[in-house]
Image (cartoon, rainbow, N blue to C red):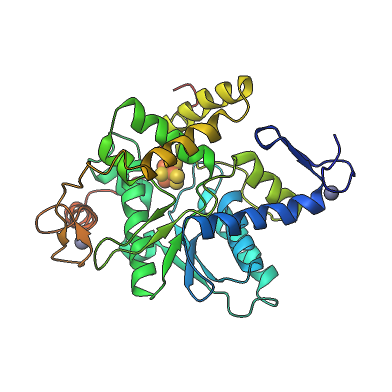
Length: 330
Ligand code: Q46
Ligand code: ZN
Ligand code: ZN
């Protein structure tokens, strides 16, 4: 397979675009496409301050790299979840993020990394909080998502950032879209988009500049660019719905190249044509009495209630254990 631009040996073949590119031209193509999506979906402009949520994985580090290359003012936010899972996951992922910053801070003296360690700041790691709380039926992801959303929003909003950027790729978006469609979650479908406006004070604006790239495209970018990222998935991801749907969608894509992209773009077109306009967001949001962040609950938000429950549990002198990683056979 030859590069369509120069005829050299191709490093990647994107069947859905009928496009094969060599390493050099791929490393040009992906940032150009990112810029196109940023403009097309009105994500942010050159003056905006961007906070990129980085996990140490290929998507988020590639996104930060691309935004810096495109000349954006982009800082990073790393959230230390305190996940070990036998692979020292959180520690290893933080090391990758710090290495990424160390390699670029000379060239980009304005880039900053903000790090929040959940265990240190709030007194329990995510697996500990999940064990104590009764959310998530023995799985940490619901507690983890709640904690991450709160911290990302808070750091972006309090830090005066114009937008919070996440590294969600097309595979992530399509897996969520499929789940929402199978369950006809009209409210969720109405809110799924490349950009989420800050609909009320206290909420940060959110954007997903990689939402049209396949996972293999962001992985190829990271590899060809020499970005060292954490290969391991979070040990708690095993057995998740998202991974199940990604598997189904990969089967579909193997038989019909471009099916995932078509599904997503068709959805965005349907939205743009007003298909979901009648789906009103019926939830009324008010400010949490404790932290001030918007919440649909009366009184305190779920995040504050979670930590109150944990504080009460610890005050009783009960032991704090970590939620175990699922057995491989599950
Ligand atoms: S980090 Fe957290 Fe994910 Fe790990 S515990 Fe679940 S939600 S799987 S993206
Ligand atoms: Zn080429
Ligand atoms: Zn709160």
